[in-house]
Image (cartoon, rainbow, N blue to C red):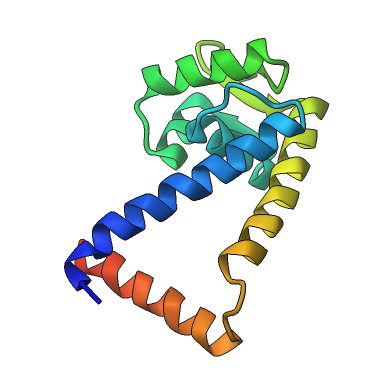
Length: 141
């Protein structure tokens, strides 16, 4: 085994899993999505209402980039915005019913992805693998 290829292999796995998700989303009628769009919709499933600033922080993007992403989702009918009741300059973002349907679809696809990802792994191997990934992540902190 050539351990020097580990990062390349991780990159390849990232790419093929992203393709898996995008292909399955297209099959379900959700097209032209970036991972940032999915992250926004996921964040809104965790908390029903977020300000643009809160959302930008959660998805690790600046406010202007977040605004562009939210506009795209609004055009697609997945989110809607309302002026904040206290600070009219600020907007709050909410999921629409279509956005909630997207999240359910994404959840189902994620379950299928994980089933494929961990095919042939024991529970102990899954735990070990996750712990190794966490250690790598911590090495970069």
